[in-house]
Image (cartoon, rainbow, N blue to C red; front, side):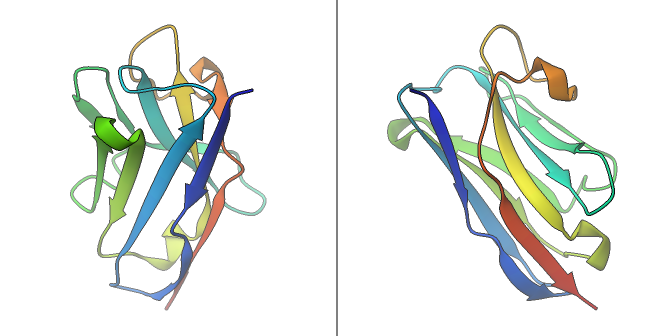
Length: 123
């Protein structure tokens, strides 16, 4: 059984930083595309960032220049470093895996998802 687990969320003041982590069990995703999405209350899940099998990256315009996605293949981890956080970044953050394609901004392209980690940014 494949499971993704996110961690690292929490409460932070505007302008602060957090680093989210995502690990997996049941399968190694070292050369799969992986992404981060987020969902705020009452809103649809939206794309944040993704990393390809070749480590090329893509970001939503709203986080470009503030967030960085990276991976550690040796430890089967994917990270999302979030700097200069804003109250509008408040959401549950999810990591997902694309097993049959490259990095994607489309929710339905992701085959596996974690349970999410809450990020709350106070003003």
